[in-house]
Amino acid sequence: MVNSTPESLKKLAKEMNISEKELMLFASGVVNSIKQDGIVDTFINSSESDRVDISKAYAVNEGRKMEQFTTTYLTNTEAKQELRNSVLNSL
Image 1 (cartoon, rainbow, N blue to C red):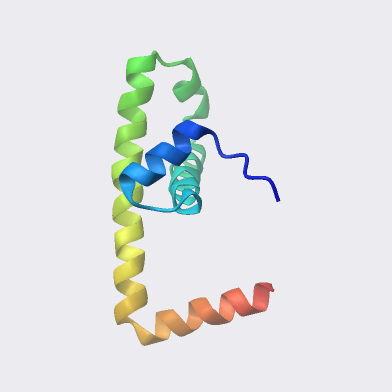
Image 2: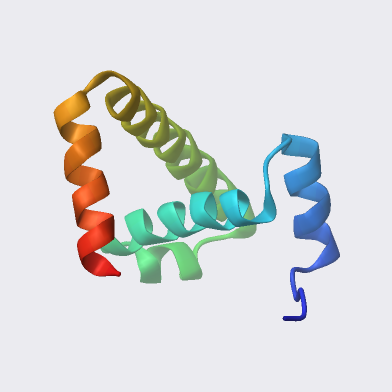
């Protein structure tokens, strides 16, 4: 499989000390939240400065969600088992 990740994203992932896949999962979470909140058109039609501000706000929120997920996964045995079962059932 050919790695088609743009160099700028590879560099960002390296700077953040995360894998390219983790970076893409994080970015997908931000995009999904923007879609769920119904502000896609607002985002697209905003100035670059406003898009940066919106992206930053959503990125902070996504980081909090990931942190909460990790904490729950590591400390809640029942939640961990439910996630494992969900993943196994989806295979």
